[in-house]
Picture 1 (spheres, one colour):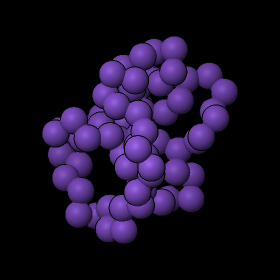
Picture 2: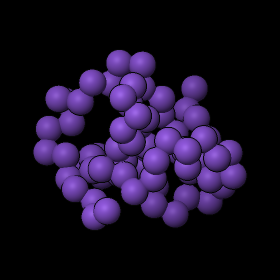
Picture 3: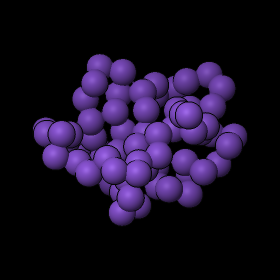
Picture 4: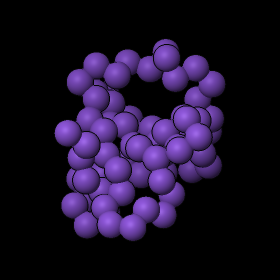
Length: 69
């Protein structure tokens, strides 16, 4: 799935979201937001938001991602 920019991230429902960062040495950088509906979006270090190639299962792999408290 190609990454698709999200032009207005303020329209996303971030209620009860879970936020993750990469475990270990960052490769892509940024933060991944797991939304209540199961959608995963990536916020890169420049503050741009896009659909993520990772799914909820990938974010729950502690060898790849860790939750942000």
